[in-house]
Image: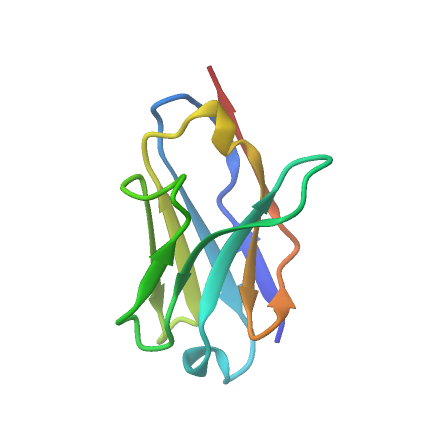
Length: 111
């Protein structure tokens, strides 16, 4: 499985961004898909995940109510819709499916 994340960028506090992660292959629909983030000097942390059939979603407490994770299995894509961004959300965001990782996309939120 190869994962290609996109959608990162620079945004002011209070703004929104949507990340997308496109997966190759045919197994994407059968696995949980997740988003993680990492800042320099810190460990990668869990952000959100969605079950294979989209019935179960989970979020880190720090993003609950602001971020939404969803997927389109017909397009092998998982999304992270981020609203009300704050500077603490600044990080490189990674998608993960079945222990595979994407290359990361930078999100920078200015105050």
